Amino acid sequence: MNPHRRAVDLGLGDEAQVLYRHVLRNLPRTPEQHAEALGWPADRTTRLLRDLERLGLVRHTADGTVRVDDPRATVGRLLDGEEVELDGRRRRLLELREALETFEHDYRRGLQLSGPRTPPWDRVAPTEASAAVDHLLRTTTGGLLQVSRYVSYGPGHEEEVQRQRDRWLSSGRSLRSVFPQSVLESEHWSDWARGRAADGEEQRYLPVDAIPVAFGVFGSSAVVLSTGHQEDFLIVRDTSLVEVFTALFEELWRRAEPALGRDVSDGEVRLLELLALGLKDEAVARQLGLSLRTVRRRIATLMAEHGADTRYQLGLAAGRLGLLDGARR
Image 1 (spheres, rainbow, N blue to C red):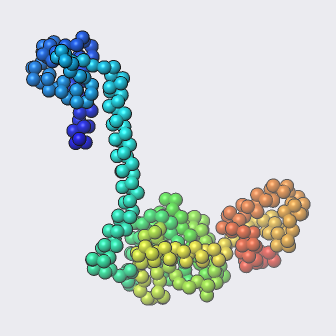
Image 2 (image 1 turned 180 degrees about the horizontal axis):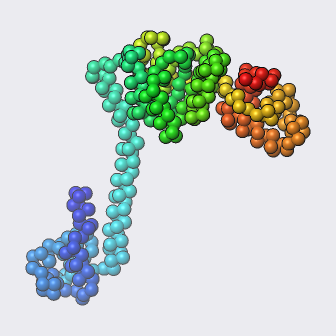
Image 3 (image 1 turned 135 degrees about the horizontal axis):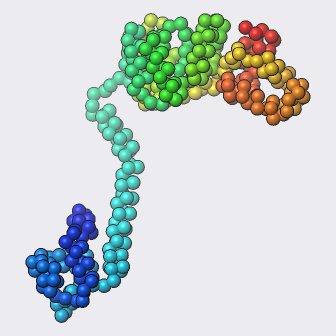
């Protein structure tokens, strides 16, 4: 049966519904009698009765009259069959939707085999790098992952790129950066990093010789790769390569240390000193005259504020900044 025709029939149409309701409300009659009672032409009434009979809603008897059964049974049976057919269609549509990703993969594979080969990256001159980064910030989705070997140069210092980065953060999108530890040794660059952290950037630090290459990952769409000072940048869009650089960032992030801000209070420094001595939480609480719950809450707050996953990371960052020997800067 034609699916479209069946759908139309199930709608019954205005005239078919009028006729069906008329037959339901009256004693068995011939088609001609129903036509006369409704004031309809006999041929139109006969045609509509054939449609109703085909659907199992009416039946012609041997004496030439039209009879009906309880619609709860006849219409219900019709609806049950239609629901089975709809369930089948839904299942086939779901299977087709689930296969869509495979179809897309096959399509792209076909393009690779039959179409012209495209390079996995584009070269961008240093003078064009800021415009390229600005475009990626405006057009990509997801988080931004950044690894810097040196922070004194690069497209990130351009005003428009900075404005786009601020918009990125204000929209709630994440920005995580791995910087060289030398940033913390310079008053200028330390203030610069603290300003970015205050805007919502998450930061961790590694020795510069532990950072193999400078790059930025824009969601799952692209990677901007620095080849060196005053050298061309590479924009990588190949999905597999983007995944490789994302994995590299996560490994560097895991190895890096969080930066502990220098606005730590005297009480928090004393807490860090006691932890560094190896005292357990209960002993720290006694030394500070605080409850155990308060001590643990302050430790958790310090870790959360400064991006430390473990107390060890928190202690390393504090020691590097000289907070544990009174070298407050």
